[in-house]
Amino acid sequence: MTTRRPVPAELPPDLYGGHGSDRPIRIIGAVAEARMRWASLIHRRPVTGAVDSGRLRVRVVERRIEAHDADVVSLVLRATDGNALPTWRPGAHLDLELPSGRLRQYSLCGDPADRYHYRVAVRRIPGGLGGSVEVHDELGVGAEVTIRGPRNAFPFVLPGHGSSAARVHFVAGGIGITPILPMVRMAHRLGVDWTMVYTGRSRDTIPFLADIESFGSRVTVRTDDDGGLPAAADLLPGVGVDTSVYCCGPVPMTSAIAAAVRDMPGVELYSERFSAAPVVDGKPFRVELARTGEVLDIPADRSVLDEVLRVRPDIAYSCRQGFCRTCKVRVLDGQPDHRDTVLTPGERADGELLICVSRCAGERLVLDL
Image 1 (tube, rainbow, N blue to C red):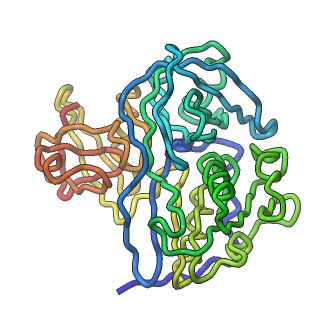
Image 2 (image 1 turned 180 degrees about the vertical axis):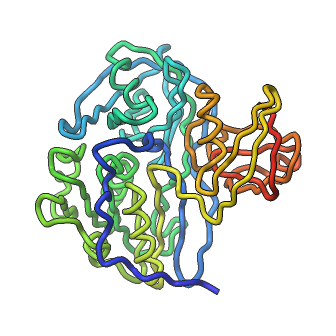
């Protein structure tokens, strides 16, 4: 049985993320990976698109400010050996291994037809966990960095080529434009029937505005300082049967759109979120770190990763949503409650666990940390 929730009349006031602390944007690359198809029931399609998990050294060959008030910069990357880069499709992201050792994911927002350059964009988050600040402060023109990928957890499925929809509607919130922009370009190039709503606090805070407005009347730019916070319906004009919706932005926006689309038969929804979803049905438990004997209490509303980072701030992690595998550890004792989307039955049987989302089915886990 499917529980239907009411569609919010208005989106929450923190729709675009506060001016203070928030989580690192991952995916933009990547980030939020929750891809859904709503009709009367929810079902998933397999992820498609080019995948390359190898490591490659690249150099920053261009750096540009894309939104002054939101402090967004774009970086153009080229292989240090000058060779062609791995192919990718709209919606793909890269893992950047930053000089500090941090691993962060950013969506590719350039042209897939350009085999020699990748472009990513990053919004500076001064109160975050350091990744975006490091990109802004350390990665100038000439800087070198190692990348992994591209990988695609947010693929663009063309009408008639895996999607039963006849038209496409895009919704982007602020920096959420990064995975959407290559989709828009592809849809336009191939003659797909498409529309878009691009939203943010003000015109000065939303990146790539000139790129988007070049498509003319297909695009509606809606900002808070010119009309107030939009309701879910304002972001979905004309959406109905045989429409696929692609949405990327802050969690409140993607959640509100998902709630609205849930009650629209024949509408497909594909969405990517910026940060980890709240813990659902969480119960407190304890984790022992076997290598030091430390015991951590995991609250009902926090992840194992959250608590481990307090005592092991250098532990590797990235997506915080259970799909990139960066935070994978081995369970030595206890019964895991797996909540990821990528581990195989064999990996789970071998004791692998993604501590960014998974929990304990009992009272205690012992981890090989």
